[in-house]
Length: 552
Image 1 (spheres, helix red, strand yellow):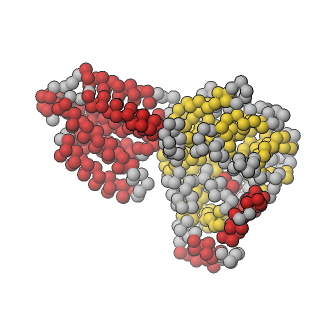
Image 2 (cartoon, rainbow, N blue to C red):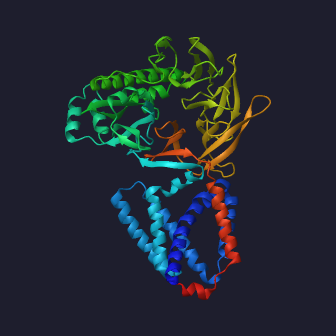
Image 3 (tube, rainbow, N blue to C red):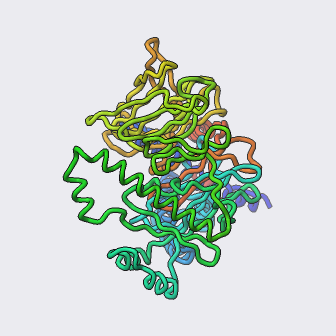
């Protein structure tokens, strides 16, 4: 009886170490190398040597081989994250058995216990892929799911957030391959331009269905959106990744909305625009206006076919007019701008204002005054991009403008309408994602930024707080960093059943999306403490070789 309990305890220890060794790799060792370059490599080697010295020589080889075995199983299975379920299962079984046999032959590991440890790593990744374990140091992962994308034309899934009962939902895209009958029907009707038939054939394998990610039982479920939910969508939120050079075309079939992309400019028009840089800002403005007007009209036609009228939340630009201001404030005003960044409080903490991007410029429109109260003009050397975020720098303060140029920078606007650059990023690849409020006493500025030491443009998901100087400028002080790359479309979201705001985000180039919620659980310090306890415990208690061999 005692021997059976000892065997069960040994198996539990093997499973624990399989999971914990991978957690240490994702949370401690890999971040050291990623962030500190050579210094991190030396620190990782030091930690590994300390652990190895805590093992008595007769069992050192066995545990080293077992650790390598579970690390290789986890890393190998993580490469199958986006394969089909059948391929995942077959490759995982073959890989696990091969590595297991090698571990037995080379390291003489315990067969049953080591196989159980390998299986535990695979099962853990069924629920959360290894690379996404990095989020667990600062977040609860509420959901890790996927939409099907074709990276060549849509490397990231757009997030159009709409209000629904009890919270918010996301309208996005999912891959769709048209049937032969659908393709023939589209080819017959492709008569609106000389390139129409060519575009139909080119995009046949690159269509998408418009789907809704809706909160059902505390999780986002992929469903067919109702016409009423589609009516709330601003269609320009679905095209930001390629606007305005690719045109989104929507059509309705059997009550569902589908999308395919076509070039907005012909090859000749694109070349002419590129050869006339002096006229580029004006031509870009014209292209943006034409594209947005055509896409909005196309979307509205689809809504009409579904039997509903547009009921868009928020404001948007269409044909040089600011739309959606609502009753009592004028439904639209003339505005020379390309797109709306968002609503906020820029010159005052009380007034409702709208930030717009224009022709290499920014404009703050005051809803109550009915006019532009501040404008910022970019230069040829430092143009204003479309990639902009807004949010407060300090608790209760006015909203700042986070500009993702190269390098990125932060602008504030005084009550008199004067613009001031208060921060410039130290790296050309630094990027602002969003500003998170309500979690800590200060706003968290979420970014993607590279290591300060390592000479690499690879960016990691991070958070900073703004510390102001006496002259009104300031510095960003890091709060935390999650060593996960390719994080895009970071979107605050209110979900039904979740008391606090959560974050939805994409993993670029994969179609993978996550819903995460900030957590104050000290996961990383706890992992460091457990690792230190294991090492110290190994030094203080070294099992005798006879006992180890006898329990084999």
